Image 1 (cartoon, one colour):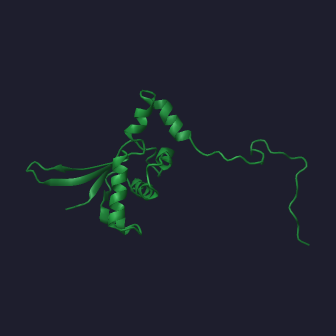
Image 2 (cartoon, helix red, strand yellow):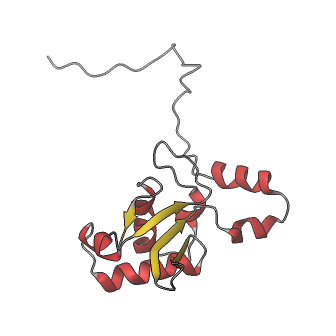
Image 3 (cartoon, rainbow, N blue to C red):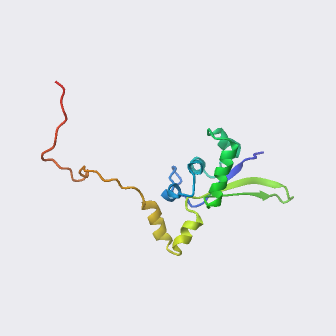
Length: 149
């Protein structure tokens, strides 16, 4: 008998590798601790059994830190946890449902779901550099590397 919670995946950016929407990492309400816990949980496939004890063993943080990180994720809609009941009224297995696209992101833009998803996924840092793009390199007047003699 398993006493852990089975993960249930909500809308996720990808299922073949760990990809998490930028919105989670840029959400200033979420601590680094909670973001790390979310990242660790999201590396597992649907149905993987997770427990607070297993999360504690996978980190340097204690039970209290992991518990508060999970509560934080729940508070802001990135995690739902529950436990169903068997027909005889006893507790069934617990479950965790994670999503990197919680309902509050959809509420911000109403029916513009496609536009919101595009903005969430494309919103990233674009550092500028004085280097030519690789598709159109500059060939004239290039400086050469120093050669040791």
